[in-house]
Length: 115
Image (cartoon, rainbow, N blue to C red; front, top):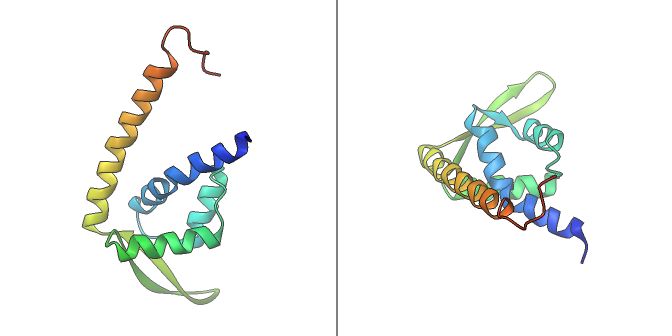
C-alpha cells in the first residue's frame, strides 16, 4: 500500500469543502480557484474541478454569472447560493468535529507524537 494513494483520497475528501470555502469569499473564476487550490497543494486539475462545480451547481449550492473579459471570451464567475451558505456552515461544523476527533485520538497516551 502506498501512502500517496491515501494522501490523494484524503485530499479528495475535503476538496468540495475547500472549493466552497473559496467561493464563500465572493464571486470567483474557476482558474483562480485552481491557482489557489494548487498553491495550497490540493493538487486538483481542470478535469476534476469543472465536473465538481457542475455537480455543486446542479445541487443548488452554487450559481454563476457571465462577465466580459478584457483578455478573451466572457468568464463564468461562481457564487454561493443561500442553500450553499447553509451547506458550507454544516461542513464547517463537521470539519471542527473531525479535527477535534483526530486531535483526541492522536494525543491519546501511547500514540505516536504528531510531527
